[in-house]
Image 1 (cartoon, rainbow, N blue to C red):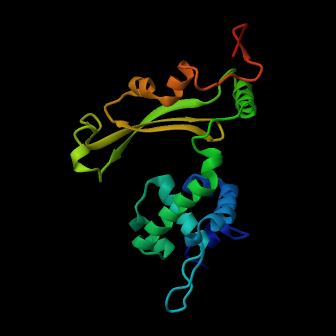
Image 2: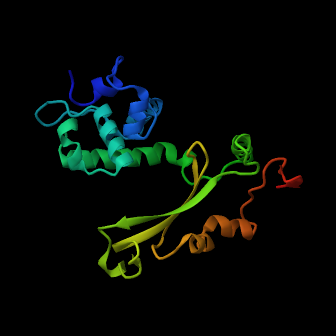
Length: 227
């Protein structure tokens, strides 16, 4: 019986079903299988290596499992050292390697890439099936409290309503498959949703005509054909 999560989640007869895996790690089990296959090619640091004494290090699935759990729950490295059998520093290195590998392998396809007309049409069809014709994504703004922030910039990013520490504002546009095709970050935390949209490169590009977001064939809203 392993204590590292393999028997619990990844074995042919796991202790916990796939729905429990998604609840704990915030990703479907099938996506974990894809990441396990793809990321070993994108980032050599994630592969199982051998230390100076000849002993094998932690395998990929352990680094991936507990990095995903940390990412999905906002936990620290100390929360899982007893389960992963990894030191806090080893978990930190694995976590950073995972983020770099995801950006390298999947970034050009999924992160901040403008959708093609065909993709826009596909996204619109899925939203129309749920009663939202013409919709090509969901936009939202969020705030992140950052503890380790450069001291000389804290005054610019200080928002006493949210925290005594620095607060940053972010804007993202995602579709129902979590394809994040627009990401705007770094505004001070005092910015609300309206001022974030004022500075948003996405909406400014659309208003000034430098970004075309026309749906192929358009869509019909309240009996009016629109683009």
